[in-house]
Every structure is written in C-alpha cells, then in structure tokens.
Length: 339
View 1 (cartoon, rainbow, N blue to C red):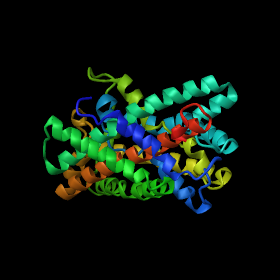
View 2 (view 1 turned 45 degrees about the vertical axis):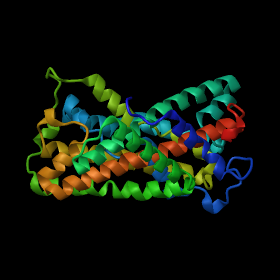
View 3 (view 1 turned 90 degrees about the vertical axis):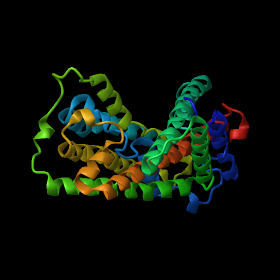
View 4 (view 1 turned 180 degrees about the horizontal axis):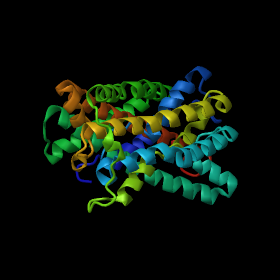
C-alpha cells in the first residue's frame, strides 16, 4: 500500500539469520543454552499464531456475540489442534529449519518442496507488510496525531528496521521476549474482563446474534475466525532451533493453543456485554470499551498493549520467516547466502 517500506527491508531481515549460524546441521552449531526452551517456544508460537485479541473486534460487528463465542470455543478443537499436532509430529520427526518446504521435499520431491516454500514466502512477505502499518496506526492513536505520506513511510520503515535489529539478537531473544510480552499485553485485557464482572450485571448480549440483520457478514466472520486460530504450523520453520524437540515441541504447542484460544474468546465475551452496540465494534474497539469501565488510563493502556502486540507479532513472524528461508537454503532451494 501507499507508504509501505520497501520489500528490501524484509529480504534484509530474512538474510539476518546468516549472522547467527555457526555451521551446518539443524541448529547450525548453536550452543544448547541458546536454543529455544519450552517458555520461549510458547511465546514464539503464540505470536506467530494468535498474538492477542487486539484487532479482532470486528467479528462482533459482523455476526453478534453468540456466533463469536461458539466459534472461538469450538473451532480450536477442529482447526488449531489438528494443525498444531501435525506440525509437532513433523517437526519432531525432522527437527530442521524450513518447515513445510523441507517436509514437502521429503514427502514428494524438491520441486514441490520449492513450490511450497515459494508460496509460503510470498504469503509471509505480504503478511509482514501489514504489521508496520497497524503498529504505526496504534501509535498515532496514542498521541492523537496524523502523519503526511512521507512521514508515514519513514515511520513504517523505522518500525521495520527496529524489528530487524531485534531479530538479529537471536532466536532465543525473540522467543523469550515474545513469552514475556504475551503476558504483558494480556494484563490490560484481564483487567477489562475483571471490571466487566464487577460492573456489568446483564449478560444477555451473549445470546444475541445478527443472523436476521441486513449487515450480517458470515463470510467476514469465518475468514477472521480462521485467521485468528491459524498459524500454528509456522513454528515448524524453527524446529532446528528447539532444545529437545521431542519433549519441548508438544508441550509448548498445547500450551500455546490453549492460551491463544482463550485470549481471543474471553475478552470478546466480556467486551460484548460492556458495549452491546455491535455497530460500533471495529478494530481497536477494546480501548473504547476499556474507557467505558476503566476511564482514560485503561484506554491508553490498551492502546499501548495493542501496539506492542502488533510489534511483537511482527518480530515473531519475521523470525519464523527468516528461518524458513534458511531451511530452504540448507536444502539448496534458494541461494546459499540465505543459509
């Protein structure tokens, strides 16, 4: 879109994994102490898949609370869990970087491994390009400011460069930071839910749906539901960076799926009873809802948390995409400079 940083920044960030590697093999000679443990892996999975409920508020507007509650309560079992378990099985059987590109090459041949990797990289670059814009939007809300196109471009470029520098600290740094921030960004939402329990007495909106309304948008709802609860296969790209993957990977995946699903379901449930005017629900509405029950301090806290959520999501996805490219380089599907 207009004002987006150049794609060169993203390819530069993919190439940064070459700085970390020390030699051949799945973990490239990285000492065991620098590999991903359970909590660091939980953080990385959480942000490459869920990343918090921020930005998902529009689902309330599309169909009403009841379908949202049912969907987010059931869908993890028939979508997220099967994807997560399949990823765990493949990642523990073949604990190398590269994810689906390596798995497809082993199952079929190198051509299909390359095609799987190519389309995954295209999806990754397009997805990554969204995060600087969303992060900057939250920052501008925080300061009640607007930027001209040139200033906006530089702001997004600065955010991209910051995330590249953070990734250059290593996969363990990204994982541990993601775990810590997964706790911090959800604290304001937990406060929001507690205030809802204290101050709201009418929970009847939970039974409302917009199935007979003209504005009902089931296609949008299903798309956001799938998007919210997908991405658990991304961690396969860093399987070579996991300490004792046969033990760590299954444990981290189950924890991340549970936490990720709950972190969507609970805030949307309690947010809907605070503000039952579903036409107002748009991306960023959690901050508005927080102001209704907690005042300005909770509004700004939620805006900061939302910005940190998108920034950390950007960092985690950049990390998995970088190691995905490295895995392809190890299999000689892309030039060795990325390996």
